[in-house]
Image (tube, rainbow, N blue to C red; front, side):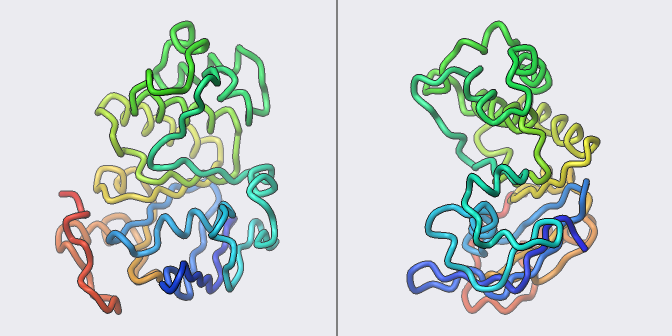
Length: 245
């Protein structure tokens, strides 16, 4: 039994069936990757697991440590240790970096905020008092979001396109943070179009048409990036341009 189990999950958004009998198990303390073409249902799955508005009318079940969380709110799921880092990090005009990080932290001290900023390669004295707004680059905001996750001490972290819009240095710091999370027993799900990000995982799932169509080792699933596509039951041509070399 995985720490998080997705059981035959289906979801319609408007007239489109986005998730179609989705089944997935995440093992505790492992880094997993979810790959596949645009529109396959990857981000939708993460939103449904988090319980975001418009993603709650699902069939099937979501189990955390064997107990259904399908009826819980976003806040209740977060309290149980589930968190989601979006592709585009949030901006909170007027909210300081210190308050942003400490909001969900178990230890809300300035010392803890400084510690997690250092772990993502940001000088605490230069960032604690800054606002989480447009004065920060995308890479800075993504690092700050990862710092906030480290401070939460979650059970499960889902990261949607963690390499989107950031430079090599920021990505290396995020990869280092992933290693920290894994060493602390945190379960991670990386949603990605990137082979580099896939290579940071230990196990991978290939998604198409709202279903898992293959799973296994990173070497096995990485064939997707070479072949650009793998056989599945999708009724349309996938967006192959979304797959990075």
